[in-house]
Length: 208
Image 1 (cartoon, helix red, strand yellow):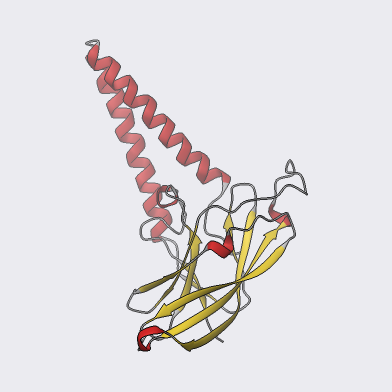
Image 2 (tube, rainbow, N blue to C red):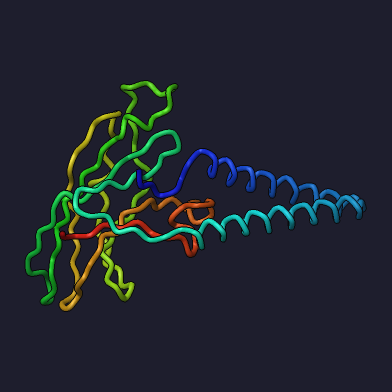
């Protein structure tokens, strides 16, 4: 299974780092204002060591990762903590676009993978997806975003649907790939997530 790297353990690590860092910051401020120098130094030291360890793990996860390009029909799972939504490219159409460019219509299949839900989650409980980002990218790194409104539909386990995402790209853009990923603000700071700095990305090919 190809995922975006989010899982309960990395989420707990992120939350622990945020809450722990916040508690140490409060302890440092209180210690400083009450004249408890040794306690302030201890809070600062523990915070610095913890932050350094977290950044180190974040970096290790990134440098040991790799890029993937999925073929038509291959699925990428975007995690929603206790369940996964699977996405794949079902088809691609092109036509002349505005200003002499090309309009790409990419048909994306979204599926709520029932094999990934928690045992405590009711089988008829629907899920509203988190934020998504979609763009076509070329080898030079230029990105041409498309609307993800069609990916906001609620799903129940085992349900699937297809939706078209339209991209307008300039003339001459070639060897395009589809980026479809989570767009949640915290994901760049989660260990092992593909949105973190330097981490390998999983993208979709638009042809055979």
